[in-house]
Image (tube, rainbow, N blue to C red; front, side, top):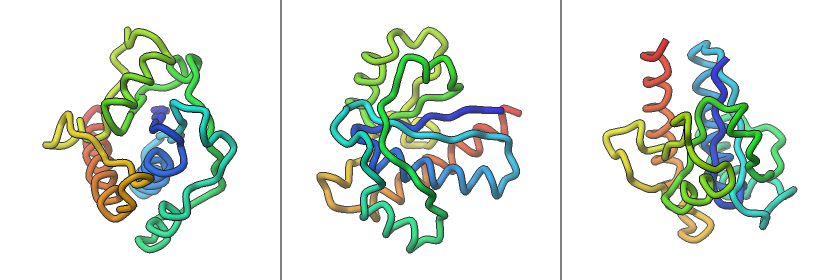
Amino acid sequence: MIKIMFVCHGNICRSTMAEFVMADMVKKAGLDVSVDSSATSYEEIGNGVHYGTLNKLREVGVPVYAHYAKRLTKQDYERSDYIIGMDDMNIRNIKRIVGNDRDGKIYKLLDFTARKGQNIADPWYTGDFDITYKDIKEGCEGLLKYLKNAK
């Protein structure tokens, strides 16, 4: 089983959106993939999914299940095949938490698209969950294609 950990700052907007979108995609594709998400900060630990993420996912028909923000750990690096951040700051903070990426597991989500290296904006600040969803969907589609080709 492939294990993916999506990571953002608070684990209530982008990483949870990516978790739910990817979980829906891999289920429909019949792939043996485990999907989770976490934060690089302690700010939102224990809080549920942001209402903007919930509303957007319901609007597009992506199933949402119970999730409470948690922080990324060093052990998550060992347990995961892919640790996927949303922006440059997430990547820096991921590496600060897990240490050196000795196994090459850390990526940005848009690295799996033609927009490699680009960031996904945080809707906590922009208020635009539509753009964030579009970018996350594009990244997850690229990741799904990558996983299928890696089989």
